[in-house]
Image (cartoon, rainbow, N blue to C red; front, top):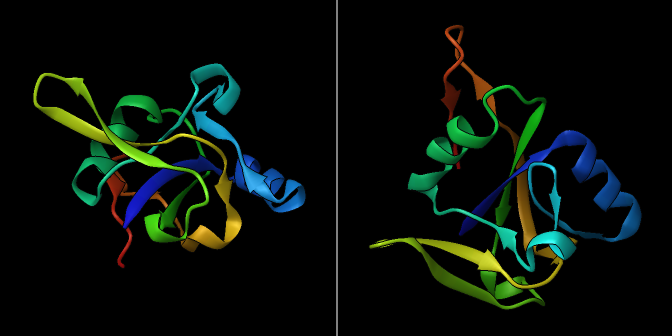
Length: 113
């Protein structure tokens, strides 16, 4: 399973268009050439770094075997790899969607699953 943090409005737009094309906050697939994704242990760090002042947020649970676009682990810093999706996310590859919530002190909490 890989994960993507989505703004609720972007996910709603994907439901209308039939696929998801947002790379990361404020950047499209066309802008970046891929969609940023994370492994479970990387999600909260990404949320804190890129989405601290954003919301409401959703966490898309993506089954890479269901994606119609290729996925590649890319080295973003020496020894640090993140999955990147090189094309749109087909909606049937998203097997679960959960709110990415915060504690009372503002820290993100990984949803179960």
